[in-house]
Length: 170
Image (cartoon, rainbow, N blue to C red):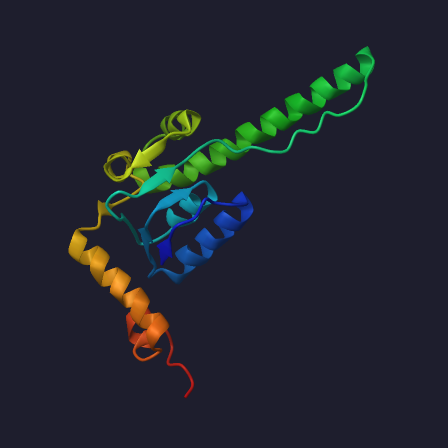
């Protein structure tokens, strides 16, 4: 599965990751810039490779905070309570994300959360060194994968063997 995505909703990333894990034979190829929930789904693959010059971003979760309106001191206290609750929920979500990275890279949840705090794009080798990617594709592999993708769109012949799919109906 080739991935180039800015991410999206975490629940979708986790769900897709579980489908990938359940399949058991998926290998991920990161191209371009892959971030957020898109990185989470990659962690459940059998292997993860990244094309030279590609980037990955892992970061903390976020949610919409809507604070329009007026409030007296009791209202402000309620807003503070709500924000404190939201903050605790975000911390729990961050720990869940970090545990997914931990299952792949063997680092502690805290180490993964430290990297998530940085919100830094990792270069191909940095992603390998951090352990969320297994290897950098060499140029021949990149060309082969690009050609395979092009061939799928040009002709449906051989798609079953290439992607280990059941035979398509004639």
